[in-house]
Amino acid sequence: MKEITKLKNLPARRAEDHKGRFGRVLVVAGSPGMCGAGCLAALGAQKAGAGLITLALPAGSAMVGELFRASIMSAALADDACGTISLRALPQVENLAKNANACAVGPGLGTAQETIEAVWRWTRSLGLPVILDADALNALSRQTAALKAREAPAVITPHPGEMARLTGASTAGVQADRSGVAAGFAKEYGVVTVLKGHRTVVADGERIYVNMTGNAGMAAGGMGDVLTGIITSMAGMGMDCFDAASLGVFVHGLAGDIAAAEVSRTSLAPEDLIEKLPEVFARLERGEEFFNPGDMIRR
Image (cartoon, rainbow, N blue to C red):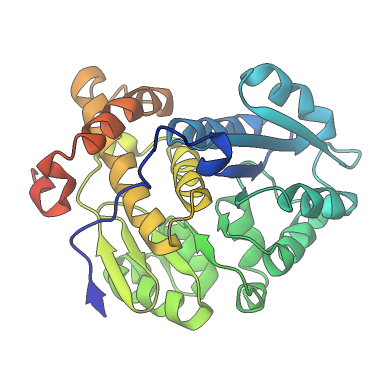
């Protein structure tokens, strides 16, 4: 297993580039009471440089996407009587994905049976890089074979509890061997695995990266949704999924560190982190030496 200590940067922006050059991102998310998760993922993707973003929500909640942010497009997916995404949304998402370069599935989806079955289908069938998070992982814990059926690249972003459900291990067992569990799952299922938490681990079965940014103030709802959007944006720009995930967790953690220094770890919220993403990317564009994560061991 090769340990990575130097991260790849985003594709350079040339004067003649246009919005299509920096990726079309699709975010499939939301259910009644949890559409904010999709909004955070879409905003994370935007602040990480995606050229075009479409936020696809259940039809009954689609107005949330319409009103959320004028520069983010929205789509209404077929839903059931409870307002969760139904199997009738399968072809809708597959058609939307044809015009996308990367797709995030999972934030706030809920665990209705038809939604779970839709996640299984999209995991197998979408022919573009897919970043699977939150309720998509809960669905896949019931059918991990869907991950092996993929031909296109995929990234999963579990916290330790979700990793435990995916592997059948205990959360304590996952935490006792974070690098080993992430690397083993990545190799067995052929997916980039981002095991979140203190010192987030990114593995693809051949390479491993242990992140040194981030702080305990980021233990708050919505932080993972922002990370999902950031990684999806980077994959949509054409970055290798391992590189996108590694840079994504570094950037996400560093923005959290900068925000926490200003608002405190106690008060840190996802919106505070998002506000600091432009500062992080400005510093990366200047090529500051801290870009080497080995320089970031500060605590």
